[in-house]
Amino acid sequence: MTYIPSRNQRELRSRAEAQLERLKLPSDVELADIVRHVAAVTGKRIDVEPVGDSDWENITGLVLLASDSAKILVRKSDPRWYQFHTVLHELSHVVFEHAGCGTLPIKHPGQDHARAGQTVLARGIATPDFEADLDFGDTELVMEAEAEKLSQMLSRLVLRPRHGRDEAVFG
Amino acid sequence: MHIRIETVAFLALLALTLMRLPSAVREPSSRLTWFATMAGLGAVFMVGVVVSIPVVDGWLGGSNVVNLVQNLLATTVFWFVMQASRTLDGTRFHRRSLWELPAMLVSFTIPFFLIPDRGPTSGDFVKEHAAQLGLWAYASIYMAWVVVIMIRMLAGIQRRTPRPYVLIRVGAWAIIAASLVEIVYLTLRVARQGQTPAVEFVGNLFTIPFYGGVVLVCSGIIVFAMARAIRRPVHAALGRLLKRANVGRGMTLAAIPDEDPVHEAYRLAVRLTDIANSQPLTARERVLLRAAAEVLDRQMKAPTVLRMTSVEPKEAAA
Image (cartoon, rainbow over all chains, first blue to last red; front, side, top):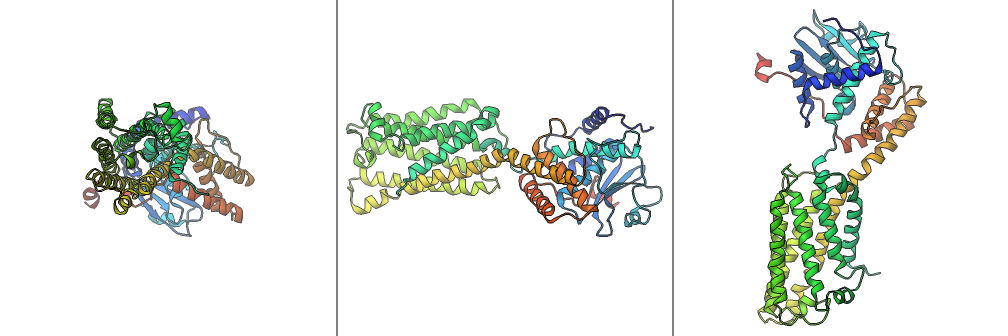
């Protein structure tokens, strides 16, 4: 299927909402559930692995895509919630079925994980705020914006008050 | 200045009732404990904290009915808190269980009115009339119900791990201990042991653990109420600081329509961390980012990213 990038913010938002709906996630959801549901709707085996060190200067995470699998690598030196966001961002690329891009520098250590036939999508550092600043003519940026939007929606499902039920009853 | 523990309990209940008013209006799951705090305010009002006991009892006929009303309200409070605790696992409150409450209330109201001589209004009504069998039945049945309710409440919260439950558990055990001590005291008095120093020593063991327990249970509930009440304003303030820091770094930011402050703060913290990946942050920005991480972790802990796979381990190994 040929990927057609979103043409405006409204379309981008509605596409992200449609993908979220496609995942059919339960209301009480954990990260592992999202991984499982993404695997189910895309038919890919999903692996998540915290790796990397200070050599990973230019990216915070990446996904190695093959026809039947997606391997998500996140920088383990990052704060927990930042790693979590990176995983959601990469999973969102998989859900959107985005093709690989050239964000990853050719000599980056992340390339060590790539095998023949795999393409790479990487979440670079210092991405712009796509809500305010997005060139819809730039396909790679639009893919990033789509992944970022869906990851925000997914994060809302997981990031709930720690003791939500207790607060609902006693709070 | 001497502050009575009953006054502290009243102030704790007053704070709780006011703090929980918005959530009680908004969410049905909060209403049980809100009914409890409303009844609790009435119960402590009857202890003479706001208006003296003789005045309140005067309104009710001047024959210590104030003591009965106080205990009716206290039982109502404990019962609603207990019922609330039983909904923590997602079980719905069934209105048909409401019959329990009037049954409990009637069970000690009848012996109260069978006390042949209740005498004029007294703050020490129970101690002054404890030699009468009617009073023993009235006060002992009330205390026994409190014990039963507290045990059921402890069962309701037994698997709950948040720290405020430590306060609630300790408070509940203190109330149980105080209630059992009171039953022992009442039994000693009705057994014609008289108001000897030893018997009165037992009787004096009631007030501090009972009202102290009420304060502890309220404190535990207040912690939950506070966490909920401050979440939005704290995250809104954090979001403003993060936005300023992001804008200061040249980021153009647009608000997401209908985004709640909690997730907006998370989004902006991600942005600032993105910036920190490419440029050194100032000391102030680093402090802000650490504070943001701390608040986000405390309020909504993000899951730890572990090595995981979407297929079963057996398949993965194959």
